[in-house]
Image: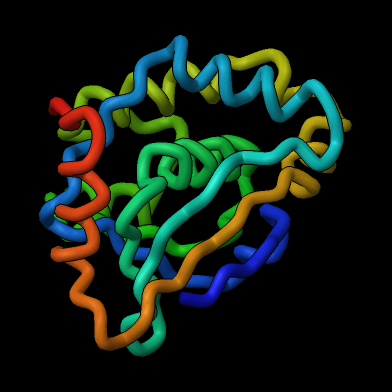
Length: 166
């Protein structure tokens, strides 16, 4: 396994895909508010680990999709497209996120719609320093080896702890 320490700014131009075996986006306002507040506390806030598998020109997200989707939505609210994110779960949601317009209410996934509405009205995001603080937030990205099947790794990680619910 390869582990990289990155800041959010280093995601620029990367492509991520949320595979079909992941649950749908389910963060609520409180989860998003906690993330924004944590990031805003200090420069270099640690966001945790994201587990991915390289697949040609994109990374398949095995763990960390809720945070990654929320960060994507936050950057879009800031009118910046830092990285690409596609959902294999529901190609419609992925397409809608890809062609994101913060002022449109055209999202099928209710949680994504609520996240967008919450983020676009969040006062902290309007502060000029927030974008700089967000870009300095750090995370680790673990890239599993090519010979390991992503679905098997996902099952291993998720059966050894508390089962996720939709």
